[in-house]
Amino acid sequence: MLDIKWIRENQESFVKGLTHRGSDDPRATLNQILSLDEQRRATIQKLQEAQARRNAASKEIGNAKAKKDEAAARRLMEEVATLKTTIQAGEANEREIEKKYQNLLATIPNIPASDVPVGPDAGANKVLREVGEPKTFTFQPKQHFELGEALGLMDFETAAKLSGARFVVLKGPLARLERALAQFMLDLHTSEHGYTEINPPLLVRGDTMFGTAQLPKFRDDQFSTRRSSPAEIPPDEIDPNTGGIVRSMTTPLRDTLWLIPTAEVPLTNLVREDIIDEASLPMRVTAWTPCFRAEAGAAGKDTRGMIRQHQFSKVELVSITTPEQSAEEHERMTPCAESLLKRLEIPF
Image 1 (cartoon, rainbow, N blue to C red):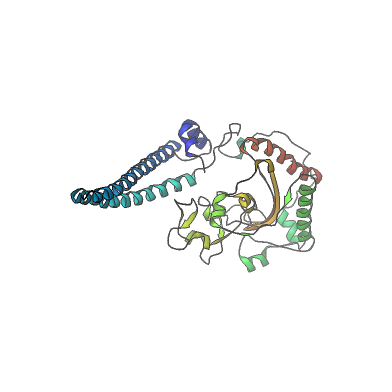
Image 2 (image 1 turned 135 degrees about the vertical axis):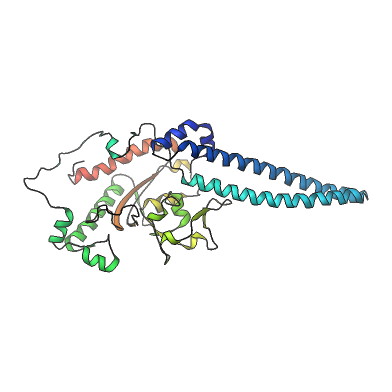
């Protein structure tokens, strides 16, 4: 989540960043978060003042009784009783404000870097360089799924029988090719690029998904292990005491396990809530995992073939480093990925 202090001190940058991301009414979002922040701080201050007065009055009761001033003791006890009620109401109000505040913060996306092109879609992206020449065919090339089905290497019909739409069964040489490509990528990244291979869990808790922003915003694109679909699970809330996600009813969300949509989720969360010696950074890790995505917003798109599948395999690279070294580490990571395409002679 964005730091509220940064939002307070960089209000125009916040609005500009959300505008570039196409967010609806960024100014209203800013006003809402600042209002909740002000209410939250004011409520906390009043609570602290009431608690301090209750503690002081409790001590004064003892002093009054020691002096046998029963009238003063009764007055102070009445004040403490009133303060107790006030504090209980204030704590309930603070919890409600905190919940709204944390939930709103959890839906706000990161602000794009200043050099990111601004535009409505990928068409606004700038081509920085091109490597290789796309192959020119003397005939109309077939789609990948046409070749796969004709060669008996892709079986969408059987996959649909097993699991429904947006799945595929890979057979024979194609299944072997996928495994070989993943092995090639892992070996290259670990032996030449300094990454450590990780074999992480494929099922993770809700707070792990929250750690990489899959929850709560993209919850409808995820698969959960509960019998009901993610859309039928009550909305996520943020625990104001721990910052973690809980179910809005009685069962903690941690009792629900989620299928990872990318290995980025477990890899990034390896260090969540840990204190790391800066001297040990950067921490570079890689993993090859199945990935699972509901593709809730993909209705009618790429309905044939292996694009937008509910399950697919992917090799992920993650570098954990300091904010100051983040851009430099990202620039180091890019040629690591490019080297795969170059060795496979795939133009890009």
